[in-house]
Image 1: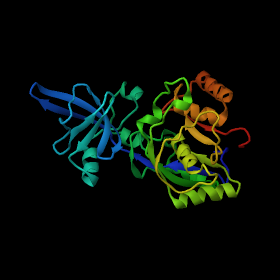
Image 2: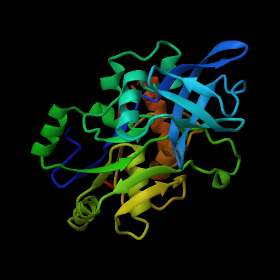
Image 3: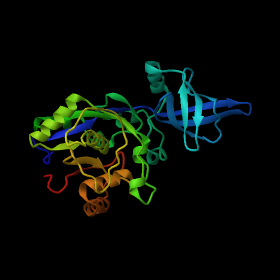
Image 4: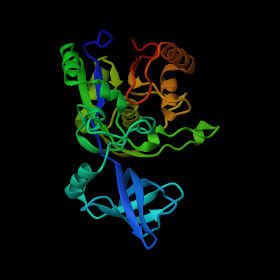
Length: 303
């Protein structure tokens, strides 16, 4: 609490996680087979999704998830597929909420299945706009009491929306990071949000995104030096050498090595300082990843 001060503005990602894990079955002449599906993102027609087992699925097959929710395999690649569901709009949302499970990260799901509590635990208190397949996890540290206490100190809040996709967490597998391509995610910075962030900067206050997703969005919208309204996809990739136009500090969890998120925090803080921060975290048994501890990263000169 003491590191925040009157005039700071926290930028919050108000995306809402969908229950993107579905278990269903397909029926063929050789019998019935169980299929596990994880939705990745809306496509122009349907949803991109992962499946286990993907190899045995055929284009045109129908996967039945419940009495009223099913999907047809419209396309398939070596890594994922496109599904067309039998429902759309509010009907689809209702059926998905009734049938799906929260898409917990693999390191959690490997230890236990999702349960009813995850529907609250894996959702931020300010989640409003449905569309993410992973939580903006730095925001999970906030509850109503903390938000009220910060507001009483004179800290302001602005909400933006970035629907977090699975691509955010994929490792970088190329030697030359400039050739890595981020998966695009849909985001929105409203005119009111852009104006509020710019007003804070004009007044000398600090703009502090909560989470790498909020940071990536406002930096996408602020490449001119002023945050502009934004609606659409962003595939911005932030790695050392990046010039930050909007961000003064960042609240974030602790990330996997060789990830784009680790590169982002290294770009903000410097690689040597990040190594020291992570060495301290490891030595003191900090909890990493989605349900782990948070850090407030303030670059040199950003106090």
